Length: 256
Image: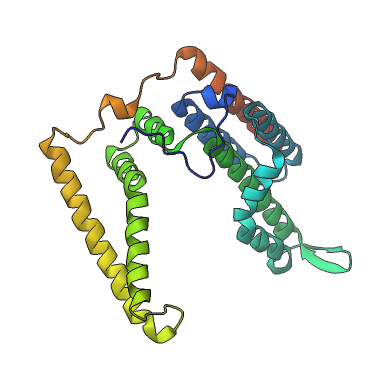
């Protein structure tokens, strides 16, 4: 139960960013994102400053730009929507390469792309430098509601069990002639999903009762929470990026 359980986005390293306590990195990422969101969309220079901050943190964390950009493709649907806004927007229009585009649509599309990309990159850096276990520990130290951290903890610990259960059920269906590629066998697939839910519920109930019988009181023990809470010096180091971002955002608001 105390294993690390690194996720697919985690990149093992001994960089200064990796060594920071998880609660510091989570707080820094959230505050940085809030500063980016609060920046006026017309302050183009400010987003360049944010991009420079992200690049500096990525360099310190030893995370390459290729890795970041390839994983950032998850925001592609939002980028496509942003590209459509100049054509769909109303109000004042401007001609660009023979196309009549909405000024508000251009600014709105830029706003989505710039802020969305910076938020995704910041989240990827957090995921690349923090294991899933440490993320939950950091949320617990930040006084995140216990019900949320407990759900996340159990999901993490038993996700592999549920995936294995689903794989065995699929093998059993296929061995009996089921082929989920055919639409008329969708009913069997739905029944399998229902059975998996019941098995997961029953297993969760058994695990919970076993934990209660061993003294579980609704909060993870110190062994799970781990040692090494952030010191004042580490909080100051982690505050550097959000403080610079907040300064950029405040300056952008004042100049707009």
